[in-house]
Length: 125
Length: 132
Image 1: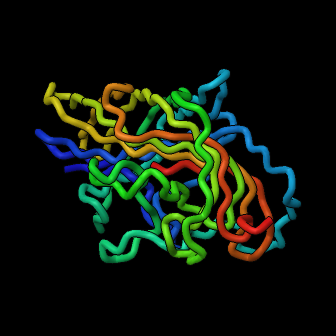
Image 2 (image 1 turned 30 degrees about the vertical axis):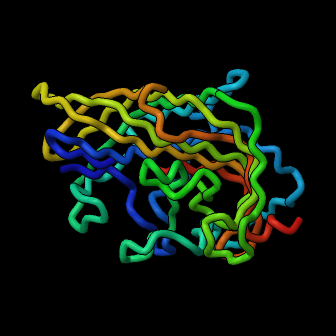
Image 3 (image 1 turned 90 degrees about the vertical axis):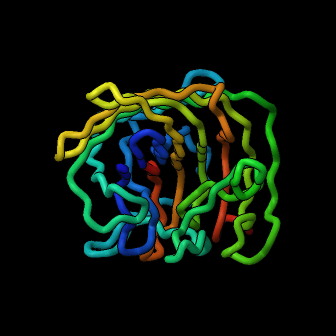
Protein backbone atom coordinates (compact mmCIF):
# COMPACT_ATOMS: atom_id res chain seq x y z
CA UNK A 1 0.00 0.00 0.00
CA UNK A 2 1.69 3.16 -1.14
CA UNK A 3 0.51 6.52 0.07
CA UNK A 4 1.72 9.97 -0.87
CA UNK A 5 0.44 12.98 0.94
CA UNK A 6 -1.84 15.11 -1.20
CA UNK A 7 -1.88 12.59 -3.99
CA UNK A 8 -1.83 9.11 -2.57
CA UNK A 9 -0.81 6.32 -4.79
CA UNK A 10 -1.67 3.22 -2.85
CA UNK A 11 -1.03 -0.32 -3.89
CA UNK A 12 -3.08 -2.09 -1.30
CA UNK A 13 -2.82 -5.39 -2.98
CA UNK A 14 -5.39 -7.37 -1.20
CA UNK A 15 -6.22 -10.78 -2.27
CA UNK A 16 -9.35 -12.72 -1.68
CA UNK A 17 -9.61 -16.41 -1.88
CA UNK A 18 -12.09 -18.58 -3.63
CA UNK A 19 -12.83 -22.19 -2.94
CA UNK A 20 -10.55 -24.12 -5.21
CA UNK A 21 -11.82 -26.76 -7.60
CA UNK A 22 -8.44 -28.34 -7.99
CA UNK A 23 -8.74 -31.91 -6.84
CA UNK A 24 -6.62 -33.33 -9.63
CA UNK A 25 -3.20 -32.79 -8.13
CA UNK A 26 -2.15 -34.89 -5.16
CA UNK A 27 -1.05 -32.97 -2.09
CA UNK A 28 2.14 -34.26 -0.54
CA UNK A 29 3.46 -33.86 2.95
CA UNK A 30 6.62 -31.80 3.15
CA UNK A 31 9.88 -33.35 4.17
CA UNK A 32 11.47 -31.80 7.25
CA UNK A 33 13.69 -28.92 6.20
CA UNK A 34 12.28 -28.77 2.69
CA UNK A 35 11.17 -25.55 1.01
CA UNK A 36 7.41 -25.70 0.60
CA UNK A 37 7.03 -22.05 -0.32
CA UNK A 38 5.44 -21.23 -3.67
CA UNK A 39 7.67 -20.23 -6.57
CA UNK A 40 7.31 -16.83 -8.25
CA UNK A 41 6.23 -16.57 -11.87
CA UNK A 42 9.33 -16.55 -14.07
CA UNK A 43 8.33 -13.38 -15.91
CA UNK A 44 7.59 -9.93 -14.60
CA UNK A 45 8.19 -6.23 -14.94
CA UNK A 46 11.79 -5.08 -15.26
CA UNK A 47 11.68 -1.91 -13.13
CA UNK A 48 14.69 -2.70 -12.74
CA UNK A 49 15.10 -4.92 -10.82
CA UNK A 50 12.84 -7.53 -12.35
CA UNK A 51 9.80 -7.90 -10.11
CA UNK A 52 7.81 -11.08 -10.58
CA UNK A 53 4.38 -9.55 -11.13
CA UNK A 54 2.30 -8.29 -14.05
CA UNK A 55 -0.35 -5.57 -14.13
CA UNK A 56 -3.48 -6.82 -15.94
CA UNK A 57 -5.96 -4.26 -17.20
CA UNK A 58 -6.77 -1.96 -20.09
CA UNK A 59 -3.74 -0.57 -21.87
CA UNK A 60 -5.43 2.84 -22.16
CA UNK A 61 -5.34 2.93 -18.35
CA UNK A 62 -1.60 2.29 -18.36
CA UNK A 63 -1.95 -1.43 -17.62
CA UNK A 64 -0.72 -4.41 -19.63
CA UNK A 65 -3.89 -5.79 -21.22
CA UNK A 66 -6.91 -7.75 -20.05
CA UNK A 67 -5.45 -11.14 -21.03
CA UNK A 68 -2.45 -10.82 -18.70
CA UNK A 69 -1.51 -13.17 -15.85
CA UNK A 70 -2.69 -11.87 -12.44
CA UNK A 71 -0.93 -14.54 -10.37
CA UNK A 72 2.45 -14.01 -8.76
CA UNK A 73 2.79 -17.77 -8.17
CA UNK A 74 3.84 -20.21 -10.87
CA UNK A 75 2.95 -23.90 -11.12
CA UNK A 76 -0.41 -22.89 -9.71
CA UNK A 77 -3.88 -24.31 -10.32
CA UNK A 78 -6.70 -22.62 -8.49
CA UNK A 79 -8.85 -19.62 -8.04
CA UNK A 80 -7.58 -16.08 -8.37
CA UNK A 81 -9.07 -12.65 -7.77
CA UNK A 82 -7.57 -9.37 -8.91
CA UNK A 83 -8.73 -5.78 -8.73
CA UNK A 84 -7.30 -2.38 -9.49
CA UNK A 85 -9.62 0.26 -8.10
CA UNK A 86 -9.34 3.92 -7.18
CA UNK A 87 -10.67 5.21 -3.87
CA UNK A 88 -9.99 7.76 -1.17
CA UNK A 89 -8.45 7.90 2.29
CA UNK A 90 -8.01 10.25 5.23
CA UNK A 91 -5.16 10.34 7.71
CA UNK A 92 -5.37 11.02 11.45
CA UNK A 93 -4.98 14.76 10.84
CA UNK A 94 -7.86 14.93 8.40
CA UNK A 95 -5.73 15.14 5.27
CA UNK A 96 -7.45 13.66 2.22
CA UNK A 97 -5.79 11.33 -0.23
CA UNK A 98 -6.50 9.72 -3.55
CA UNK A 99 -5.84 6.00 -3.42
CA UNK A 100 -5.22 3.33 -6.00
CA UNK A 101 -5.65 -0.23 -4.77
CA UNK A 102 -4.17 -3.35 -6.33
CA UNK A 103 -5.84 -6.34 -4.71
CA UNK A 104 -5.12 -10.01 -5.39
CA UNK A 105 -5.65 -13.41 -3.85
CA UNK A 106 -4.82 -16.95 -4.88
CA UNK A 107 -6.17 -20.22 -3.47
CA UNK A 108 -5.36 -23.60 -4.89
CA UNK A 109 -2.76 -26.25 -5.51
CA UNK A 110 0.83 -25.29 -6.23
CA UNK A 111 4.16 -26.98 -6.73
CA UNK A 112 6.57 -25.77 -4.07
CA UNK A 113 10.22 -24.90 -4.48
CA UNK A 114 11.17 -28.42 -3.43
CA UNK A 115 8.87 -30.01 -6.03
CA UNK A 116 6.18 -31.11 -3.60
CA UNK A 117 2.49 -30.38 -4.16
CA UNK A 118 0.49 -28.32 -1.68
CA UNK A 119 -2.81 -26.55 -1.27
CA UNK A 120 -2.72 -23.02 0.08
CA UNK A 121 -4.14 -19.53 0.07
CA UNK A 122 -1.99 -16.47 -0.55
CA UNK A 123 -2.64 -12.77 -0.47
CA UNK A 124 -0.88 -9.98 -2.32
CA UNK A 125 -0.63 -6.94 -0.03
CA UNK B 1 4.90 8.86 0.93
CA UNK B 2 4.05 5.50 2.46
CA UNK B 3 4.31 2.00 1.09
CA UNK B 4 2.77 -0.74 3.20
CA UNK B 5 3.66 -4.15 1.76
CA UNK B 6 5.15 -7.43 2.99
CA UNK B 7 8.30 -7.12 0.91
CA UNK B 8 9.86 -9.45 -1.62
CA UNK B 9 10.83 -12.96 -0.49
CA UNK B 10 14.39 -14.18 -1.09
CA UNK B 11 12.89 -16.43 -3.80
CA UNK B 12 11.59 -13.36 -5.60
CA UNK B 13 7.98 -14.00 -4.63
CA UNK B 14 6.54 -10.52 -4.86
CA UNK B 15 4.41 -9.04 -2.05
CA UNK B 16 2.69 -12.41 -1.61
CA UNK B 17 2.14 -14.04 1.76
CA UNK B 18 0.19 -16.99 3.17
CA UNK B 19 -3.26 -16.04 4.37
CA UNK B 20 -5.71 -17.91 6.59
CA UNK B 21 -8.41 -19.82 4.79
CA UNK B 22 -11.03 -18.50 7.21
CA UNK B 23 -10.40 -14.94 6.09
CA UNK B 24 -12.32 -15.73 2.92
CA UNK B 25 -16.06 -15.98 2.53
CA UNK B 26 -18.20 -16.65 -0.52
CA UNK B 27 -21.73 -15.40 -1.11
CA UNK B 28 -23.24 -16.52 -4.38
CA UNK B 29 -21.54 -14.55 -7.14
CA UNK B 30 -19.19 -12.66 -4.82
CA UNK B 31 -16.29 -13.26 -2.50
CA UNK B 32 -15.03 -11.26 0.45
CA UNK B 33 -11.60 -11.24 1.96
CA UNK B 34 -11.08 -9.69 5.38
CA UNK B 35 -7.85 -9.36 7.32
CA UNK B 36 -7.30 -7.45 10.56
CA UNK B 37 -4.03 -5.96 11.79
CA UNK B 38 -1.90 -7.87 9.33
CA UNK B 39 1.78 -7.13 10.04
CA UNK B 40 2.79 -5.10 7.00
CA UNK B 41 5.88 -2.89 7.12
CA UNK B 42 5.85 0.63 5.75
CA UNK B 43 8.63 0.89 3.15
CA UNK B 44 7.76 4.57 2.48
CA UNK B 45 8.55 4.29 -1.24
CA UNK B 46 8.04 1.64 -3.90
CA UNK B 47 10.84 -0.93 -3.48
CA UNK B 48 12.14 1.02 -0.48
CA UNK B 49 14.98 -0.31 1.66
CA UNK B 50 14.29 1.07 5.14
CA UNK B 51 10.90 -0.14 6.41
CA UNK B 52 9.35 0.47 9.81
CA UNK B 53 6.81 -1.88 11.40
CA UNK B 54 3.22 -1.36 10.34
CA UNK B 55 -0.15 -3.05 10.12
CA UNK B 56 -3.06 -2.93 7.71
CA UNK B 57 -6.66 -4.08 7.97
CA UNK B 58 -9.02 -4.44 5.06
CA UNK B 59 -12.14 -6.02 3.69
CA UNK B 60 -12.53 -6.43 -0.04
CA UNK B 61 -15.45 -7.84 -1.98
CA UNK B 62 -15.51 -8.90 -5.62
CA UNK B 63 -18.98 -9.24 -7.17
CA UNK B 64 -19.34 -10.86 -10.58
CA UNK B 65 -20.27 -8.36 -13.27
CA UNK B 66 -20.06 -10.41 -16.47
CA UNK B 67 -20.17 -13.84 -17.97
CA UNK B 68 -17.11 -16.05 -18.09
CA UNK B 69 -14.14 -15.04 -20.26
CA UNK B 70 -12.08 -18.00 -21.45
CA UNK B 71 -8.39 -17.20 -21.70
CA UNK B 72 -5.95 -19.55 -23.43
CA UNK B 73 -2.15 -19.23 -23.40
CA UNK B 74 -1.05 -16.54 -25.81
CA UNK B 75 2.53 -17.75 -25.78
CA UNK B 76 4.52 -20.85 -24.88
CA UNK B 77 7.25 -18.68 -23.35
CA UNK B 78 6.94 -19.10 -19.56
CA UNK B 79 8.07 -15.52 -19.04
CA UNK B 80 5.33 -14.13 -21.28
CA UNK B 81 2.44 -12.39 -19.43
CA UNK B 82 -0.09 -14.41 -21.45
CA UNK B 83 1.43 -17.81 -20.61
CA UNK B 84 -1.53 -19.00 -18.53
CA UNK B 85 -5.09 -20.25 -18.93
CA UNK B 86 -8.14 -19.02 -17.07
CA UNK B 87 -11.88 -18.71 -16.86
CA UNK B 88 -12.49 -15.29 -15.35
CA UNK B 89 -15.50 -13.10 -14.71
CA UNK B 90 -15.18 -9.34 -14.64
CA UNK B 91 -16.02 -8.00 -11.19
CA UNK B 92 -17.30 -4.92 -9.39
CA UNK B 93 -15.00 -4.41 -6.39
CA UNK B 94 -15.56 -2.65 -3.09
CA UNK B 95 -13.02 -2.18 -0.31
CA UNK B 96 -12.54 -0.60 3.09
CA UNK B 97 -9.09 -0.38 4.59
CA UNK B 98 -6.97 1.18 7.30
CA UNK B 99 -3.37 1.09 8.39
CA UNK B 100 -0.71 2.58 10.59
CA UNK B 101 3.03 2.53 11.07
CA UNK B 102 5.36 2.73 14.07
CA UNK B 103 6.04 6.41 13.36
CA UNK B 104 2.43 7.30 14.17
CA UNK B 105 1.03 7.67 10.66
CA UNK B 106 -2.43 6.18 10.25
CA UNK B 107 -5.19 6.28 7.68
CA UNK B 108 -8.59 4.91 6.76
CA UNK B 109 -10.26 4.73 3.38
CA UNK B 110 -12.59 3.05 0.96
CA UNK B 111 -13.06 2.29 -2.71
CA UNK B 112 -16.03 1.22 -4.78
CA UNK B 113 -17.11 0.12 -8.26
CA UNK B 114 -17.12 3.72 -9.52
CA UNK B 115 -13.33 3.66 -9.22
CA UNK B 116 -12.84 0.30 -10.84
CA UNK B 117 -10.09 0.16 -13.47
CA UNK B 118 -10.06 -3.61 -13.90
CA UNK B 119 -11.23 -6.46 -11.71
CA UNK B 120 -11.72 -10.13 -12.31
CA UNK B 121 -11.89 -13.45 -10.51
CA UNK B 122 -12.07 -17.08 -11.48
CA UNK B 123 -10.03 -20.22 -11.98
CA UNK B 124 -6.60 -20.27 -13.57
CA UNK B 125 -3.67 -22.58 -14.29
CA UNK B 126 -0.06 -21.82 -15.11
CA UNK B 127 3.34 -23.50 -15.17
CA UNK B 128 3.26 -27.28 -14.98
CA UNK B 129 -0.55 -27.30 -14.79
CA UNK B 130 -0.98 -25.81 -18.27
CA UNK B 131 -0.50 -29.11 -20.06
CA UNK B 132 -2.64 -31.29 -17.81
